[in-house]
Length: 324
Ligand code: ADP
Ligand code: MG
Image (cartoon, rainbow, N blue to C red):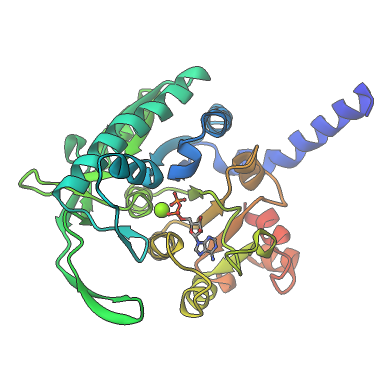
């Protein structure tokens, strides 16, 4: 490729991105980074770079991180075998201590360090700060374990009662990027562990976010979780439910599916699940092709222009083209 070709390709890309830039300026995106990308410095750095671009284009960003693999790793080092049921961690007192050390300690700091390396002014907080995420300890519930209904006490695991986004809004108004660790507390000050996907969806709703983006260790939602080429480019709540019912969506994708449903039902227009390969976030947000899975509430809610562009909506790229 000659220099002139290269320059004209850049100009074309910028031109194609312009409608999206206009659409998203001044809006809020909640981006959740999964534990696996958080443990890989080069991926984290690449994501931080992409987030600086998004912010420079006038989008307000709240970053939420997970930390499952790191929590399990430290847990095993300390001789505590982690237990996951339906993609959620069973959290006894020892597991909670490990989760606090890992999430509010190591993972949060690593994300901040990656932001620092690209000049992003990031501030680490957790749902415990300033009453941000109020939760209630989950009562023991019946869950299917190995095909059998079993009463499970998830321990120090919370369900979100309410979110007060004031702190996040103040940080963003002052130009900081909030980096949120997914711990919360109840009104008595008991710390509770919450799946980061759930926290991200609750924050997206409270902030009236335009978009909620899950950055995971898979390229998006897969029809067959063992086959990365079975990526689903676009679906809606009904499609998602089918994938859960037929077992295509399992383990860690289950809390994500619930979080996606909650966000879409409560006003977030578009949710994306993407991988952490290079430039995945910018590609998903600012190009017609996208990189992962776009989930909307109902395909029929797409505008006439979107429908026209996408035919039967099989052509996901077109749906994305029309609405980002
Ligand atoms: P994260 O840190 O992104 O929350 P999780 O491990 O909790 O990561 O969830 C992502 C995992 O969900 C994937 O690595 C994959 O093993 C699993 N998974 C289950 N069903 C699916 C599916 N249909 N498509 C993609 N991933 C799936
Ligand atoms: Mg997860």
